[in-house]
Length: 210
Image 1 (cartoon, rainbow, N blue to C red):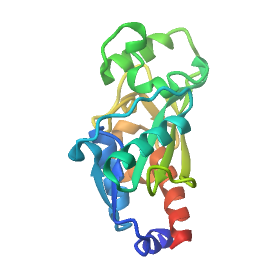
Image 2: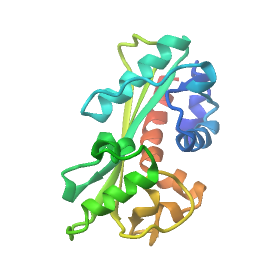
Image 3: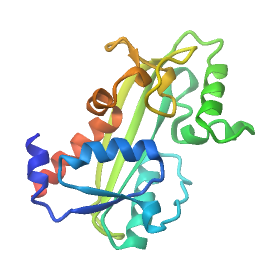
């Protein structure tokens, strides 16, 4: 919490979130509000989505952050996150949001989850983790972007559980909490998730600059 209070002394007041994902916006806004940062979704500033052509989370996150900063003149925060499944050699990984599309299906959470379950039908190893990389740039050509990351370990279920969250949350089971990510109340998820871990790391680094 000390890092969050010191963050209020930094020049970062308004920050563009380089995403139009409503679920991510809710999570980040809740986490950053206490730090005194006003998060503005890029869609509110007519910023189109950036391309994500790279095979790594960090490259995609940094590309999205620089894109939003360049078009708005504001500091920008981007995340690139996804589900990495051990038995699938890290897939869906950076393609998590469009996993079904890779097989000719529609772009939707339901389609992505259906493909994931299908791919794991004959697998006994259900270990997986959510991975998040955050990239924050103060301006588009910032030579020292702040990078943070978080991993949230769990297992993949065959049937969905819970009504909260988004993406793969209903199928992502957390043994330590005896619940799927979709069964967690938002406040609990915001304390535990891969994004929460990455954001705490980012806030600490920002606090050091205050």
